[in-house]
Image (tube, rainbow, N blue to C red; front, side, top):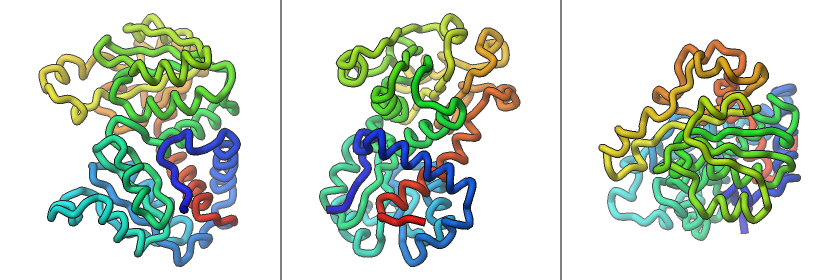
Length: 306
């Protein structure tokens, strides 16, 4: 059976540390990796719109000397003719060596893995998981702080539907001495099952607040998220909540001088463009880190070493 990454917990802490070390080496010695995936093919099957994740995967494979095939929207696939996702995956796994798949339905990546002859990487399944974004986040935190323990992280915005938040909480819950501040309106709180399984079960301290201003001074890392229109069934509720938190230079006045600001992107207006010039803004570094960590993961799942 091929090795899949459907959830961040599919990777041990040791494997994550190894991937981070490989990603750092890739940046330091890119020429060492430029042909390691020659004659290998990555299929990017995106049943849901994406810019960064899809292009990051494609850029990663090309940088490793491999090639890419696939589609960027469901309307480009035979699912519009009634083909099942299982049949699509079975077909594509005859052409490619590894598959990165995004789908709007929770659990779709797991279902796909039951039909694949090659490794499946979950590139996001609905509001459930996004393990490679979490690897990107972990690499960024490590490069900002040189550690993955001993800090206070604030998760702000849409914590209910935010799959990047769900994956990050599950990942960081395995590291030591981390405190969480969960910042959201009542309607967008972190789901109870995640708090029960990832935080309460392990005695990890967390607080839930509705005010970013009241919490920002105690944070070492601030992880901003957008309120996702595509996850709402009621547009009126989305419009009421979409501007709940907007990070501005004024709101950053109380923050620590070494705060690191992360965001999985895309942003709408939850971070003012004026914040981009702040040295604490790390979200554009995240974008670059996403390519590096996906290069490392592709190599790992294909059992390739430089």
